[in-house]
Image (cartoon, rainbow, N blue to C red; front, side, top):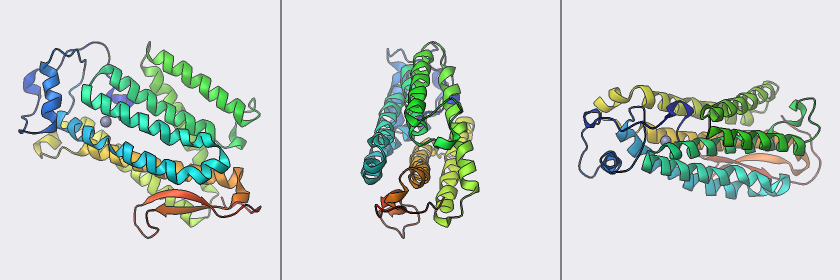
Length: 292
Ligand SMILES: [Zn+2]
């Protein structure tokens, strides 16, 4: 996974060899560094932190570990609510694949695919879970809203190939709108377990972004300390943050959309673990009062 700010523009050649840190034998980044000498027409305009990208390459596998678990854990809720819920974590597998591809090739296309797949994850979550009562006045139901989001996402995806920043704009618009409505929801929430879930989600997200920023701007500093795992840690944190964030939003949604199923929060694999993966269980089918 890369972030929008790392965007590379236009065909640029690799950095001169002296810009790269010395590589230890067997270092995964040897593989990446070989790319600069090969005939491969990779294009990059910024000084990638090669060792960081090496840890990023390995940690991309976190997507293939967490996504199937979340697909499994979300299944009862998805069956009751809408099977399209599975698209979120199904698409996260593609984010992992494109992230892997990007880290292996360091190509512009790899970065584009990586970022576009993130847009699609956000768009699916936005279409599925954005609270109905916050719909714009001209939208009457969720299917109209979903169609609107789909059209915007398709247009953005296509225009990304002409103007790469289009993706970043749409991504930020979706994210800000989701965060805004989530903030309103949480303000009136008194359920301590929901608030804990929200706190951990925000904490993970802040840590993930800090790692990414540090990796992006403090590359030489971390290299001097010989600590080359920030990009890898970013991947792991953002995947776990997505698990927490998506469960939080899905749980709030379940309380409004399928309250009769008595949604409740659980953690996998153990309830007592400090940082398990959160999910929703449905305890019943009778009408009940919503908590949040
Ligand atoms: Zn990455």
